[in-house]
Image 1 (cartoon, rainbow, N blue to C red):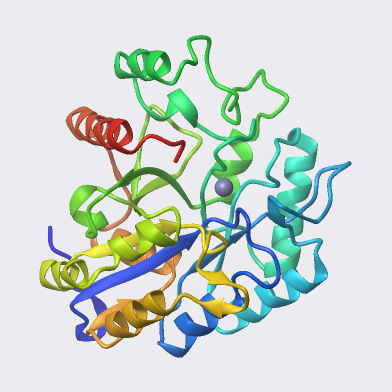
Image 2 (cartoon, rainbow, N blue to C red):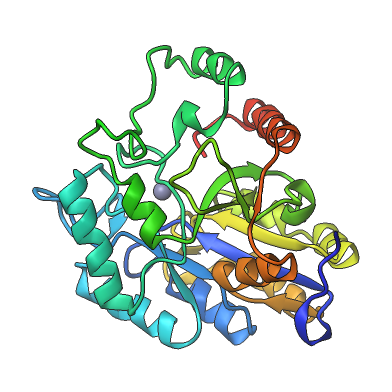
Amino acid sequence: MNIRWPNGKSFAFSVFDDTDLAVPGNFEKVYACLGESGLQTTKSVWPVTAQGFEARSEAGSTCDDSEYLAQVLRLQKSGFEIGYHLSFHTGQKRNEILGGLDRFKELFGHDPVSMSNHASSEEGIYWGPARISMPLRAVYRTLMRRPWGSPHSGEQESSPYFWGDLCRDRVRYVRNFVFDEIDTLSANPEMPYHDSRRPYVNAWFSSTHAPEINTCLRALSEPRQDLLEASGGACILYTHFGAGFQQDGSLNTRFKELIERLSRKNGWFVPVGTMLDYVAAQRGGVQSLDNAARRRLEWKWFKHKISVGGTS
Ligand SMILES: [Zn+2]
């Protein structure tokens, strides 16, 4: 079903920015460029710092880094959505996860609307092999050399990292699959969707895979922008704005050129949560994924995964 976008817009575009690597000095100009171009997107955060770790490190900053937090709050004030990227980059146990969610709410005034799992955290919910169903899961485990399971256990009630009920009660949208297509909605027309096999997540969304500057420049190339516009669909780009977009104080000029070009199109440039709320409302609410659609999505992602490797 084609979505009729608001205000006569012909397509929708957003970004979910995974906060890995982002520290003061390596991402602000990206947001200045997006803001000046009229694009409002989603920046994720780690709300707290696990005991024994620093608020600012090579892994990225947390909201305990006051300089970083001030910037994040400025972004929220100017219309960007602040998303959740688990409580921290290493897994914390349930009580600390609860503290992270509470801290998020205290800082930003509400529970997270959208979130993504971090690649290597025990808090990960339905992550690793649990992203997909048997028998494909068994093949995946073998290929990833994880025959005994997964480090992620956020949905397992017996795990000290269990927070599935908190996720269900407090988080609206969680990212699962990523694809190459610039039109994420055509790759996953069911999104946002509920998957009854993964009941602690209210609704899932997919993204267009562009983890760092070079893949992002390819994803946003002129022909692909034109394709998105012609499709009338929606793109949720998944990237890490801390990964090479701003270096030695300068924003990548090609990125700036591509964002400015995109902004001149008749697109609806809104945060991930706003876009997903709108799509769900057009369909009368979040729909449940049926078995055939689940199979199709899982296989499609699996093929993508084999072709690109990596953990996202
Ligand atoms: Zn991450």
